[in-house]
Length: 214
Ligand code: LAC
Image (cartoon, rainbow, N blue to C red):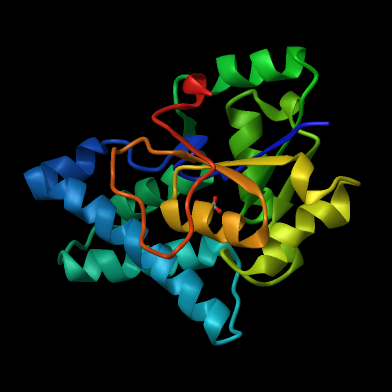
């Protein structure tokens, strides 16, 4: 049996959508703003896991956003709310639905494994009409640890009666691919931004540029 497991943000959902109101304030710097926000979000997840001080991902995303607004000296409550909606009702990458349709008709079981809270993940799949494809939306809320803790990858095996060899994991985040490989999964790096792979002594099983290349 093949079970396809997907990371959510950056892999299925685009969290680097251009935001007009941000561009109006920061111009060319708006892309760096989105990069700093994402990087801070991830840093906070790693720090909170190390400190054993887990918080729901939506709160971590908001804390990182508040840091980023301060860093770029932007004070605009309407914009802050608009930015939060990048994660609260995210937009899928264009090839996602076709990919899911194809693999559903091939009989592959599919699920999401994400730092996102159950409410966020549920909103994301429902808003994008892709909820019918998944056998589970597995969230860090259940283990109160963020990726790449092995405990979160283990969650899939607690819900689905499958072995590590049955899993093919897809993530656009190189560190998440390394974490899943470290756990023992075959991991595919969806290298959407054509970046070099992280030097963590772990390699992806395969690397592709978008899901349809699989
Ligand atoms: C997730 C983050 C890592 O969805 O993008 O788990």
